[in-house]
Length: 448
Image (cartoon, rainbow, N blue to C red):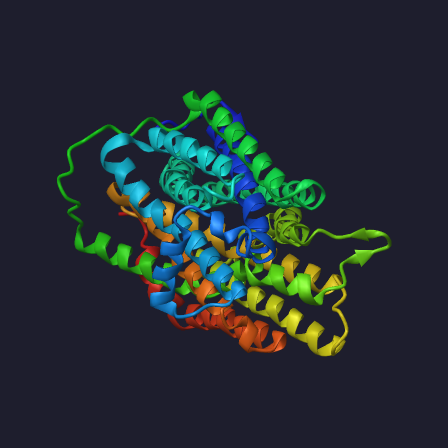
């Protein structure tokens, strides 16, 4: 394991700098494209004159219809979005296993970046839409879990505090890319057309690959190729794995409430929010940058709060932080409910979706980097990358759920739709309250 202890980045291994910036550019491309995807499908791609040109789409649509039944244009777009964004987070499990057993984490990240670059390029053409989504899903599988596992490998096992803060820095880089991506891609799409927005995403994905290769020597050493001999775990290690899986399941609740911001929320904003300010129309994708801006700006405050609590020996453990994130996500969705009911039939003022997205950004800061740090610290070493990839399975489930739940948008009032998401997030908070003590007894065993 390479820690680059003689070369630091603000008190952290220098490899964190290259991993963070690689992920920033990758997230620029991902969130920039994602900010356009639902709107692009509803307003252009799935309409007559375009849908006929998508390679393989008739068979794909028939298969989807056989499972979920007939779908309106909006419901079809939501299902496609959910499937794509869900499988983006499923394939890291496979990518982590392949890296652990055969090709190593660094090689896996390079393969993933190349595949994602090709996918973003393919998104610039209607005909290759399904191929583009497939390449992006495969690339994410090789990149996501493995780059996160490399962050954890920069620190010694006993350095829990610095590892957690390192993951916060890493997640801040994610949010920087997530801020800039929708702003740039959204503006280009509004001014020049959808495919210009997708094209700039491809350019930044290639920039991420270049950053990773430049910092290659500072990253944890490549996992040696080895013949798979099984993963024999002790009784204690199995209990830890089960406990981590339980935490991942709990996180599905707030993830579902969080990730709808990238799907149906864009459609709701387009239909029900007053977007014109003077002579300028706010691009709808810009609202997807707000939760990331909130996360970035609140990092110093949250870290300061945690340090103050640590000095008093009252800093919440990782489970309590995850629970806090769930309650913040619930409150954020209630903001939309109050705004909708208060505006009656008039367009909603843009300040309300702003507060909604900002609250979700804070909830993300509390629960997702904390979950990654917990998995990196507690997972048995022989399954570290695999379990890091498994943590993204919670996002696979939640993103598929948002695609399915999004199909109810046209069948419910907007207030009912967002109240449902508030209840889902609150369910995660309740589960943490019920099971945190039992899980802590397994996950916080003092070293022998």
